[in-house]
Image (tube, rainbow, N blue to C red; front, side, top):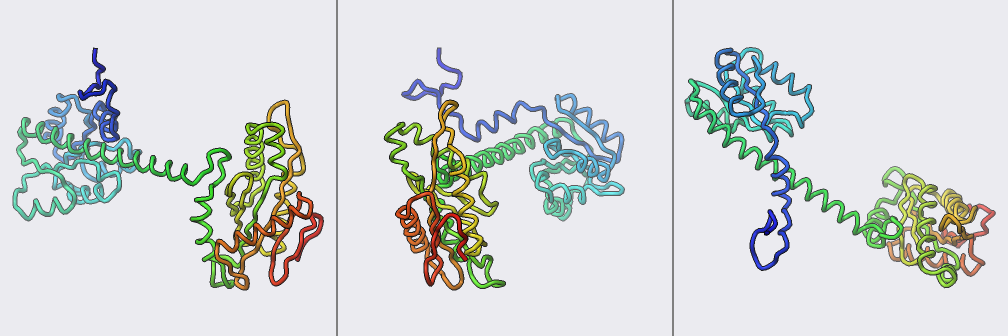
Length: 362
């Protein structure tokens, strides 16, 4: 037996449902909600009765003001699919009610039908300009009412399905963009994200009162003896170490900090607004966050792990393009490694100042 969604062709595999089809399938089985707004009780009861006989959910309102107030009390997901509204009413006319409804975001998806004895061209144009979708002339013929409501519902559901499909597509695109900028192993931002963000951040560094940031702190962090961890315990444990380090660093990052996986066991932390002395203290706190206790890679195993950090502070007096800033941070990291690892080296021209982990560089 062929599958229920088989559509022919050479392959026996079902054709995947498109976003539009999926959105439509979610909407088409819902019972349509219809509102009848008319100050004439006879017309209101007659129109409501015809529509209820078709199986629709029908609510009736005596005037536009009452209907509008009810709309404001409802969640937008509970708004009607179709509104059939009289033109001339006390308190709030059908024309003004239509303008308010269509002027809202959710109201753009409500199919609006004017129920009116007005047939002049200028009246029709005025109604269309207010946002009306259709007109039904009084006295109302039941067959015409049913046909126009059915046609309006088809169009309204199609518009809803397309809007829902667009939202789903946008969500997918945002997810794909997020995945494209995220390191799949650690969850930190990746090198591509750094390449996109760093130039923009550096452009915002400048004189106090004129630029967004006076300083920008760029730190390069490297896991000490990481090759030895991989060689001794295997790459799986090495991956666990990287994941644990990122998790711990994330817990100690400033709210304005961004952490990127630069490559392998190297990471970059970018923090705007930190002066050299504050950058020194901040970097030292990150180093201590890792060195203070072993990294747990499994319930039965923990490893002592440390990191070395090299950094540079960009300012109005020390502007750097992205590639030079990264190069200087990398050189500072190399010096920290040569000095014995598990330490910090921070560059601040005109002369570099170093990195003993117990002292603050001013």
